[in-house]
Amino acid sequence: MITKPMIALDVPSKEEALLLLEAFQEESLFLKIGMELFYSEGPDFIRLLKKKGHLIFLDLKLHDIPNTVYRAMKSLAALDVDMVNVHAAGGKEMMSAAKRGLEEGTKKGAEKPLLIAVTQLTSTTEEEMQHEQLISATLEESVSHYAQLADESGLDGVVCSALEAQQILEATRADFMCVTPGIRLTGSDNGDQKRVATPEFARKAGAAAIVVGRPITQAENPLKAYQNIEKQWIGEEVK
Ligand SMILES: O=C(O)c1cc(=O)[nH]c(=O)n1[C@@H]1O[C@H](COP(=O)(O)O)[C@@H](O)[C@H]1O
Image 1: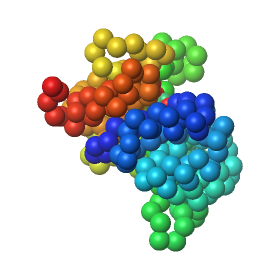
Image 2: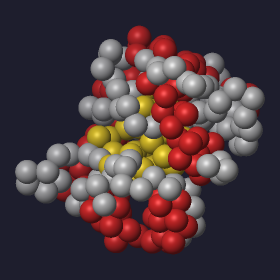
Image 3: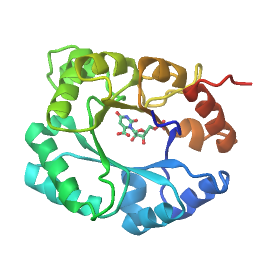
């Protein structure tokens, strides 16, 4: 279990990201850098955050032909990040190519980043999946199927809603990682998220990590919000 909640740094610039991080002072964090920040600030900002002692989940959700994903992963591995992801919908050949790229791109002596696959985005409902993606299975079946494909491709885990973590662990193996975004506290704004759960639910369902963005980044006091979520995630009593 990754005890630090992963903070989704969904802000447009390095300045805004650093301003937000000021509140956390010297604390070492697990930061998720997504497309918005990576596309604007690039690899240099990742290196800076690593130098400051943070762990990085580089969330670029690769989904392309196997050769392209293999080559892209080789580049990403050289950044020495801790976790990267692809879309499971890219298929087993693509996921295996991603893994090979990471292995070949990791510097000697460095640890290979964890590789996980997005199953169905937490912003997707079963109805949307069936009518827009024309997948006739239930959402649970689709998510478990993608998780099994990811496991067979040698990946470390998946991104899913905490609502599906327990069934995924049953369909794969006990140490398969379920990284769960769509985390919300009871009564808070879901925004565009559809399959949401509390940190406590995620823990009880066996999730390996939680990813939290707006409930922290848009809170009046981001540090306090983070600490509150962390307590619920690791199971400490909230005062
Ligand atoms: O891969 C992800 O991280 C991801 C997958 C998914 O299914 N749903 C999902 O919300 N995410 C990411 O998790 C974060 C959730 O942010 P909040 O909804 O603001 O907490 C965003 O940065 C999303 O890009």
